[in-house]
Amino acid sequence: MIVRSISLDFFRNYLHLEAGFHPGVNVIYGENAQGKTNLLEAVAYLSTASSHRARYDRELIQFGVDHAFVQAQVSARQRDFTLEARLSRGGRRQLFSNGVRLKSAGELAGVLNTVLFCPEDLYLIREGALVRRRFLDGCISQLRPRYAEALAEYRRLYEHKTRILRDGTEKPSLLDALDEFNLRMAQTGAVLIHYRAHFVKRLREVTPAIHLDFSGGRERLELHYETVKTVTDPEAAPREILPQLLEHQERHRQAELESRQCLSGPHKDDLDVEIDGKSAKTFASQGQTRTAALSLKLACREIFFQETGEWPVLLLDDVLSELDPRRQAFVLGRITSGQVFITCCEDMGLGRLREGKTFHIHAGTLV
Ligand SMILES: Nc1ncnc2c1ncn2[C@@H]1O[C@H](COP(=O)(O)OP(=O)(O)OP(=O)(O)O)[C@@H](O)[C@H]1O
Image 1 (spheres, protein in one colour):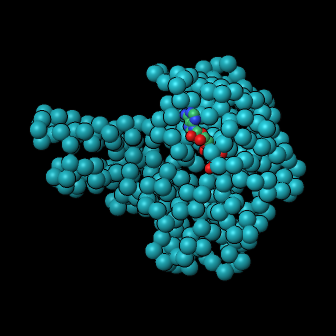
Image 2: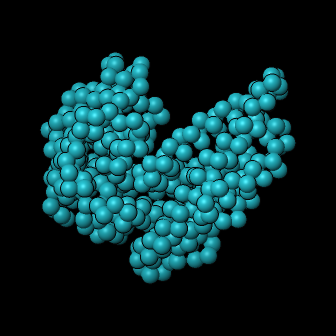
Image 3: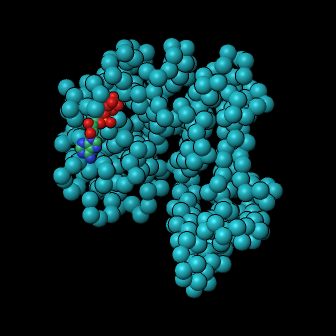
């Protein structure tokens, strides 16, 4: 899939931008705080309807303005699409594909897939479980619209149940709804566990070989999906997982009431990474955890290709300058096909690696 061009209005620090891209490598360089990441963020938004660094859509709208528009011409599945996002400070965002309003964000991923890689991702292994869950959720949501819907539903239920537990002591009648919320969370949670287990299975097929190659044949990487303890087979059908989740909830009922927190469910899942049989989070060096994080991201890109038959658009935001020359060479050697956007502070001559185009961004304009 290829983003042929983009047009931005009032998006972050861009008053108006029109840019045509190369199907190969697009290097975007400029000084700090000029709008390089904002441009990648706009491309990513058209595939996930979310931003890796904004909590709310309104953060993407230019200061002092009420609306922002992002539009791109995309080629995918041998067809051309015009994808558009209209953001509004007061109202709901609207998404369009070829002028037709989309019902859900998941429909964008049916056209455009992106894999974004930024310096924070280098801490994927070291940080808490939340970042690894986000990594899994981001990948699976793009591949499986049903997962994205279940995830959104689970988040809504989680927020609601948390409020019930928090306010239940002062207002005991709220607790009457607890059983209903437990059942719905277990039903939706079973779907999440099933999809996560299958995606981790794919990661286990692809990532170790990349990591072995990356570490010069020295390190063996293993991945384990960790979920609710009572689930015996996370790859099983959701209906088989459901009673096991209900059992876990029941066992933790009292503890949830006492702590006023949701303690049972896949919102505590983790992806455990081991290098040579030892937990990478606890024992691996900084270099090893970086290599493992890069391997996971590159594996994700390859799984997208296997699933869709097309390379997702790769967005490398400032990540190359964070890597030593050997890791830089490995990453660049691995991405010999598909469209890539690379941001950096100076023209590193990366465009010469493959055919491409170089853009100089200054103060939200193309120089
Ligand atoms: N909603 C907004 N409206 C206007 N400007 C914004 C908005 N959000 C962010 N900015 C500004 O956009 C500018 C550019 O941000 P961006 O993150 O794209 O920089 P960058 O070129 O990637 O820099 P760096 O190399 O430091 O990562 C910043 O100065 C920031 O203040």
